[in-house]
Length: 112
Image (cartoon, rainbow, N blue to C red; front, side, top):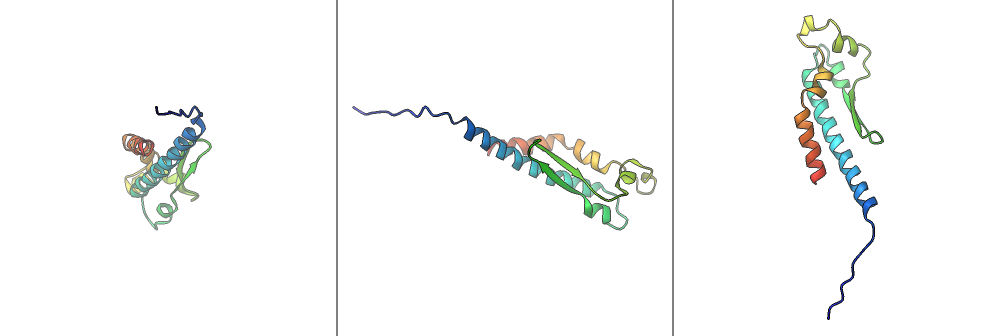
């Protein structure tokens, strides 16, 4: 007769850590995609603003932030710069207009 041993150990901590790790990977991928969209839509004069756009994952918040530290970025994002370039809201649109794609990225990360 065979003996069967059943592992009754709680694996919840390992599962939660693996899920959090995958969420962070998904956020990194989303950040890279969003950064690319923002750079594609950013009006370019010298290229300084476009080159300064970056993303940062805040793992404690399970969030990713897209932005720039260039002092005139708010004027381009929200201001009257559109009359020269025809574009405004390159950061907002990069985040808001691609939600379905970001959802796919996160779903793929969680399935991995």
